[in-house]
Structure formats: structure tokens, C-alpha cells
Length: 121
Image (cartoon, rainbow, N blue to C red; front, side, top):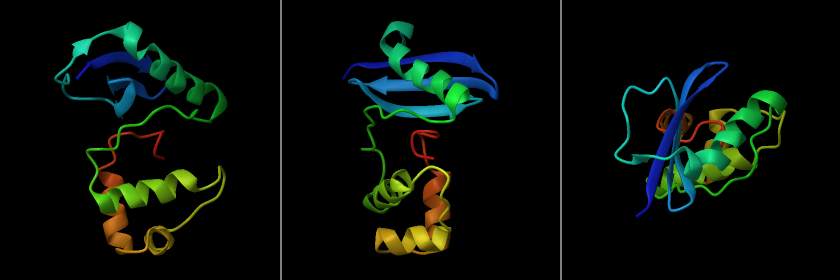
């Protein structure tokens, strides 16, 4: 397991990016802790550029994601959310229906547990 992280400033505050085996496992703002990983800006560079690009263009490029930490339901929710075209909105109830299970409240809880903001909007 090759796990690396970096912290850097963004227009909305400090950002933490954690990468494991070449895939993004965490992207958060105003983090309160350092992850169990080595600090390695070189390994994380591609993902840092994705965050910086988001603040320039409003789009987050496709990068490898590791969602193995998500339950099957949460993964289904994240798959639906990631498929929503830019500029289109769905209610949590609509997301639940497209995921094929759960309720609006369950979708809200899944989104609250999202460890990869921007990549999983």
C-alpha cells in the first residue's frame, strides 16, 4: 500500500489530498488531522493540479478514484451523483430513485460521508 498526502492553500482554505496506489481516496477542506500516510507532494501533484484546475475552470477532471471505503449503497449514490451533467440538479429523492434504493435522508447521509468532495460533487 503506497499512501501519500499533501496539504495546500486554495481560495476556500486549506485542502488535504490523500492518494493510495495512484487513486484519490480523500479530498477535504480545512482538515483537522494529518492522515496515516507520508507527505509526498510529488506523488499527489496530479491531484493537486485537478483541484487547482477546478478553481480556475469550475470543472474537476476525471482522475482515478478509490471508493472502496464506501458502502454499496453509498457507492450507488456516488455513481448517480457523478453521472449528473454539469449544471443539472437532482433532489436527494431523485438520486435515491436512480440509485434504486434508499430515501432522500439516506442520500443526504451518504453525501455527508463523502470523503472526496469535488470529484464526487
